[in-house]
Length: 258
Image 1 (spheres, rainbow, N blue to C red):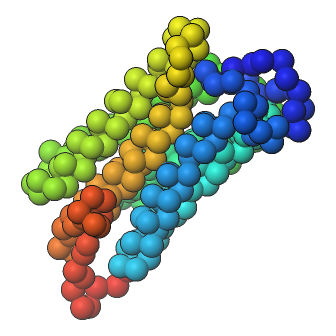
Image 2: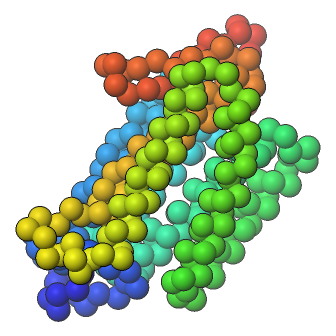
């Protein structure tokens, strides 16, 4: 939320500002809550990465967890600076991450193995170049929503074919955090004037970051479970300290990881 204050980073050049007073706590951090709320995403992605590496899941899942961390770091830089370059460093990884989700979701049934990753890589590269040259605000949102919608049919197929109650709970948590996070994002964007008059701003965009961190984690765990089932690795959902779910597998001794 603009307040006319020039800072360490200079005037705001980002096309997006959220319902949070700029530079309220530090001249180095434009939106404090929107910046710091990305930290849980990084920590959750790190937990997922350690789990994937320790149990020797396919490399695609390690890359997925790393992409979650990169996205969160890009978001931190964007909200800390509110500069156009950093905004691109936030938005471009959003698209790359969705392309990676599409690969993980659809590749098991794709008969031509090299065509999908090649196409998605080229698509992501072309988007990054175009996005760095052309500033399109509404177009980016529409494009991102379309990518998200393309993932839904496959996620639903995995859900209805999964019999394990704990895995289904992961999928339900994914939907719940996405829905609640989307509501927080919507309220922050649409009702900013009203929210700013409250004694305490609920920081809807920061809540969106927090919930989407858990959303990505639950999605990753669900996809890891489904892939482990496909590979015959006897997956089960267990809980760290009785709270944080993760996937534990038992590979046959002669199984090799690709």
